[in-house]
Image 1 (tube, rainbow, N blue to C red):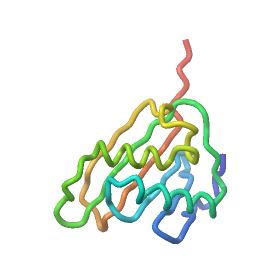
Image 2 (image 1 turned 120 degrees about the horizontal axis):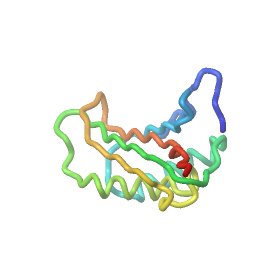
Image 3 (image 1 turned 30 degrees about the vertical axis):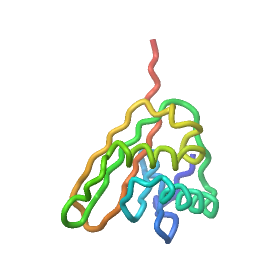
Length: 126
């Protein structure tokens, strides 16, 4: 897995990502909508230009935080999760059926953005 010396953010547009020190992939997407057609082209272009990450096999844990400025937007968090999980398919994981744990929450923030943190699920040994 890629880990830069300073864990620097990659990307300068609406999508930015980095590999955290603990190995988790952190992605930030500016803007808040439940429309998958908004996220898919942004994520595709980001990973096409910043081709430093390959999808992985195995179970994944995904945490999504929708941050908003002011009043929270009236949107269903389950629709947001579906749109983002679909957009990340093929870039972070091969199929969104690999998501073993999904946490999504709405939080006040400094701007309207989505923060995604994806980690490999710990191996279970018998």
